Length: 232
Image (cartoon, rainbow, N blue to C red; front, side, top):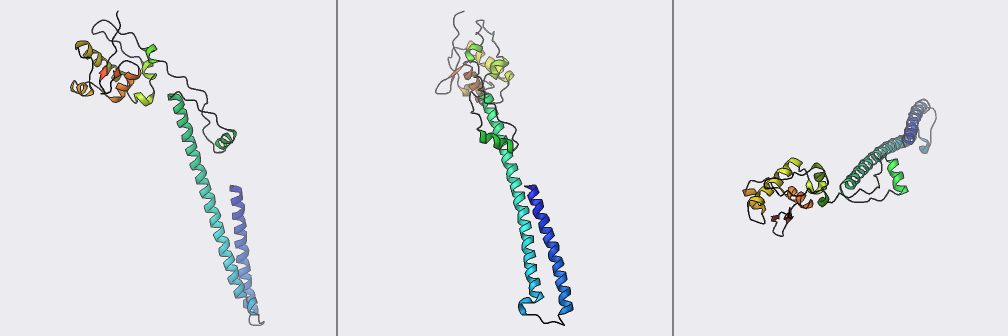
């Protein structure tokens, strides 16, 4: 594309130079011969010069249009390349955080990706589903006041779309607060409003994370229930 544009520009520059030379030559001939020889109206050098000037202006306009088209095409290709790279990265993130199998690119799509310089096609291997939370959950302790903290592996098993930016330390703090409350009271449920009154570090992401790990349940009213431990 760039080579073609350069050739066209060279042709236009040569045409402009030729037109300038013809214009000067005609003016010189007209000045020398106008007084000696009569000319027919259609052969008047002035008319010819006007036509040449119009042609020259048209060549200049065409040259500008070619440059604008080349610039617009380059901008479009760059935009498509950026969007394609963003889509590739998004697909890779989805594969890493969800149990999704993305079909491989077709031959035509692969050629387009290579032509646009994409970062590379996403892996088509199916992402292994997260390990069941129940198998990772430590057995509840029977001793009063002795609470098991959650592990980093348990937190990472929860999809990012559920846990958000919850940290392990904050989640363990909130989980201990829940266990302490239910171990010292006879209430079987606890509302979010009551948690806030008790100054618990409650958040929707923490509740959903613990629910995903099967460490608590939420009823229709949004109240929290902890699973009843079995006999020791």
